Every structure is written in structure tokens, then in C-alpha cells.
Length: 214
Image 1 (cartoon, rainbow, N blue to C red):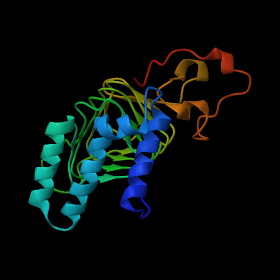
Image 2: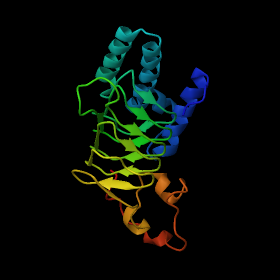
Image 3: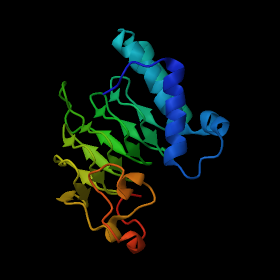
């Protein structure tokens, strides 16, 4: 999931991810000093390192400081891939045994939570290039496949197949909707970048506002 990179190289990659994913992003400097979603990822990178080194009390204290500072709570035990972008971010919670792949886009109010008090794997595994909309809850040790979409305010308690869309309470799985129905400015993946949801020939004029993801 994550190649070994230098600290500064990873930080530059994180900032470049924000610039690529957020059309409202101003300068590199403003992104680096003011984007709370970016800061939460950086805090987690340090707390996760401490967690793996056995310094778990310090890791937890750092993660709680990050929660107070950013409004985003990522447990130091969670495994986070490269280029995660948490847009707006307030109220995001990612549990201890959660696994998040590369190039994932999350919005505010998301919970990758558990449904059991038992030890062991109890939080979701999210694949790469997944988009999770505002207020969505993904609960339990479910698997969200690569290139999937989770709609805003959806409550996911079952696995989501690769490339599928989950919407509703409880979430129901549907195949990716027609391009005119699904287009969203929130995710460039819907413009065919993922290779899973390519833009059909001759329908670029059919774009309509997003209704699922933000």
C-alpha cells in the first residue's frame, strides 16, 4: 500500500494531493499551514509510528491532541495509505483497526467505526481510490472495494464491491449510475481517471450536479 519515502517527500506529496483534489486550494503555503485534514494526516503519521514502536500511551495522547486541534480523530493504530485527502474534515473518526488505501477522498462527518466491543478486527477496510461522502458511516469489519463510492449520509454495514456505489440507510449497493446522473465536481475519478468509470463517448454535455457524494 505504502512505499518507503522520505518525510519531506511524503509531505510534498500530501500538499500536491490537496492542490489536485481541491479546486479552492490557494497557495502551497496556505495549504500547509491551514488545512486541518492535511494536519490530521501528518499527526497520524507520527502517532502511528509511535504506536508501532510500542509507545502507545504517547501515541494516544498525540492523537487526542490532534483531535482537539483539527476536529478529526484518527486512532494511532489505524493504517492509512498514501494521498488521503480529508476535505473540510470536521467530525471525521477513524477507528483503531481501520485500514484505508491509497488516493482515498473523504468529506466531513465520516465515521469508520466498529459495531463490537470485542478485540480484534472490528473496523472497516477501505480500498484505494474510494470516495466517501459527507456524513457517511461505515461500520464493522466490512470491506469497501477499490474505486467504490459511498453516498452522503449512507450507513454501510455490508461489503461494497469494487467499483460499486452504496447509498441510503441502511446502504444498498447499486452499480455506478449513468454518467449524467453521477457526475460530481467533488471527484475527478468520475471523469474517467480511475479507468473503472470511464466517460462514455459523446456525453460530456450531459453533466448534471452531484447527488450522491457531497
